[in-house]
Image 1 (cartoon, one colour):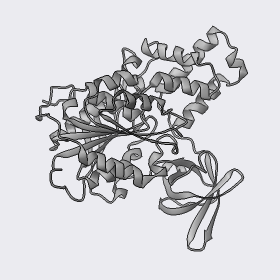
Image 2 (cartoon, rainbow, N blue to C red):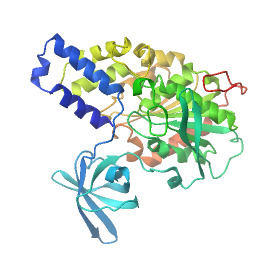
Image 3 (cartoon, rainbow, N blue to C red):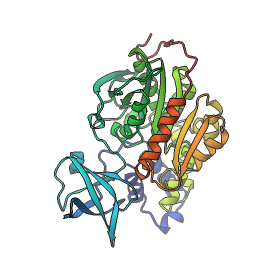
Image 4 (cartoon, rainbow, N blue to C red):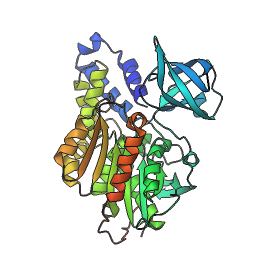
Length: 406
């Protein structure tokens, strides 16, 4: 997850004034370290939040938490016991020093008790069945092999919605459950959702070198998911991408073999300017921005191995390059309160294509946590956008591909 990335970089480089004055050799080492951290999946998320007290206040159960993001505005999930436990928490109702108090809205799994450690996450559901909608657990064919996915059916298929599907794609270091918040507004619009895992996820094949392709390699799994939806009856597909998943769906929609089947895109906190993102991370860690430039160069040339054998094409992922290739409407949820992926890239992207991009910019909401600060606004705007999408001109053709579609 994002905090892991920053802490790992800090430990690896020994963040401080010494790095700022370091020589070329140290900058080269630091750039390579930053590059490897960017493309290497984390083994397990850290659990930096501890339950210090649980008490009953009238009819409500209140938990007191200490740690990172304990006092974030909005409603969140608290995942604990290595992800086996899950509690839903309401907004902050009080603070005491470095601790925050929140109402416990429900505990779908596990036993919440003082001393338990976990993490605050924007996820609201951890399993697709928690949405209350009919769910199928399937596998779909990718160029690397079979990957797990969930099909989530709307309660009612509205007139004109038959054949409408969506593919939901999570971000770097997350899991498919991250995207489940986005399923319900599409279901209300009569859209069937395909929530996918992709390369290097649990339940999916290992990617090139076991590393991320910053959305480039992962976009081919999005292409495969679109093909799976089409085989199952989709005649148009909406793409929904979170963070690095936003990179993947934008690439699939602008240059993928099934881009003509895409009718629109919903993005949340998308990574649309990777060089700026790496420079921002270097600045956050108080190390020279030249480390980011070195890391980018090493990944582009394949000196540091990423998820693409020939190296990572950062230039093709700039806001201007992607905007130039865009042909379908986009709803973009972004926050100026995002301290991990600055909203400037998303704002530049929207400014490049005001004819197609609808920017919903907020000042509150951390990275991929915009829904949590305003779930009603997020869902209403998303549902309205999806309902209004025009039908693409695609006629149902499927190209020959490495994953056996013909």
